Length: 413
Image 1 (cartoon, rainbow, N blue to C red):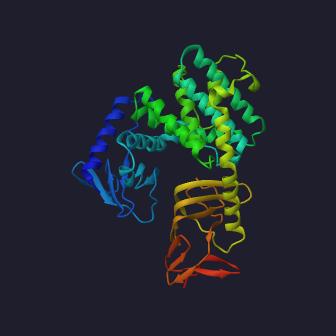
Image 2: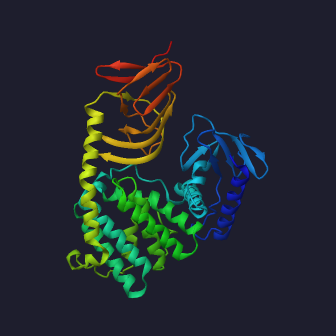
């Protein structure tokens, strides 16, 4: 790890937090933060810890990050403190503004519960992958972007149109509260990163527009939509001068807060909105093209975890996810990409593969079933391998046949 580079980033981020001086959330956002190298597990922190784990080296505090801790862009409890964690490989993947944005995003997660209260338990937002829902959601996002770029009466009209489209989308929505909770949980963190790292309003709009276009290209929106919509609603609330942050809670709905700024003015009917002005036909064409591919992916994942042999695991563990999140109502949440799953049993690494979690994947701990495909499963002592995954077992744990499947078992001597 380049500790001098880490120190430089820490200093620039601290200066941004000092420039905010608590104006955004009434709190100093300069929290403890750790960079961790995924390969070497070298860690660099901006402050020391109360247990003496980190050792000062120049302008940073260094140590070797424990193997039983997940490495992901997140907030963690570690050595008696609450830390933002940023994987070191992001340094080479992002420009500096985006990296400082990510640092601010994860720092907000450190204080989020204290500021907003406890978030509701995980809700199922699998409906966000249904084609008609996606069409209306993307339309809503592009209308909100127009509102952010406009002013005066034009902005006011765009806001009313966006809220009318959202109202139309929610006519048959099974879980409006889960949507709103996800927008608060991740959207306010994205919003915070943008506001701290990109003080220029034009840069903020450009950054969030990139998020909207990322969403448009994704096959699965269920695990991503709140990052976009929550941040957009926050920026639009700022644009209309709403004093929304001091009273915000984890159970609020940002769209309802924006609706209240209209002071009871009625919304237009959905059918009266000029949808083509917002690119409706282009959105529909893009979603129709994705629908067949996505439906095939869902069927492939369903067959993979119900028809083909699998390794089933019922143990508590932590998950680190870098990939696509695909909720399947009858199955659970499929994670497709690079995943770490580890606990008392050992450590599993999935590389460009698929992993099924039948518990809420946002939970740190979970005792419900996890699965990977058992194709080409091979056991060599404590090392178990399969297609796209490796499991390194600790003492007392075994993978055993269980009918056509396999199961992870605790077999103490």
